[in-house]
Length: 280
Image (tube, rainbow, N blue to C red; front, side, top):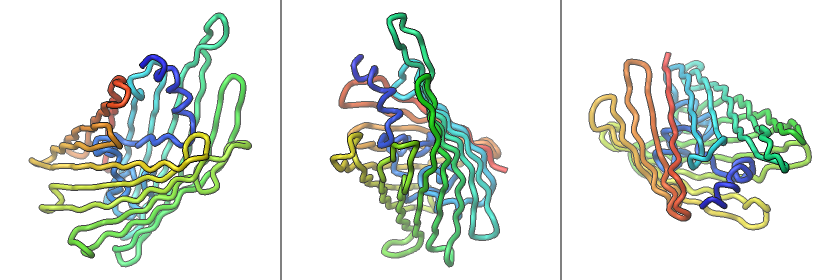
């Protein structure tokens, strides 16, 4: 277990890792591509920004696998534009402290993404969105900047089932920092809503290259969200083989979310995510 934790900063800062940004998506096993109905859509499927009805400001913080000195922060704002469009801006910041040299000096390493997203729809059934990302890397020995692009598509209608949605996310189209390109990733997600959206079932499959860009990995995600009573949300799911769960509650126009992931392969510490969403 200790060996895996030592490797975590390297995995965190490698392009293929699936971060599952947002406490709500994580609680649902990362199966959010076909839902994408809040400000987390900026990262998970920008096409979903056309579904938001009010302005939102969201923040998430986590320390992956409860690793010391390794953190992920996410801050975003989204706003509907007209009747069937939306725009969003997000800041993703991954940072850690590495002990280097014989004196075990701690040096900070960080990666950032500044994301601008826009989405619109055709007849409120087919949504499309795109993101442009300003990428940055900073460490004691290296610095760099780059640019990247994401594309999202989302169908929401009553075919082949009522209250059904299907999403596609194409991440890292022509994304590069200095001389390093980020492997492309495709996520396909489906979602079915029941009982006036008080029960949501979702599933995703992710397709991307491994760290060495030689083999293709397929990752499955399954999630459930239940709204048993007004303003209370319960969530659970499977992130590949790992169990996830979480909850959310709404107080006036502020929603608080929490989720955790239990690693079953290596018996690593749980990952906890805390999020807050302010609607205006």
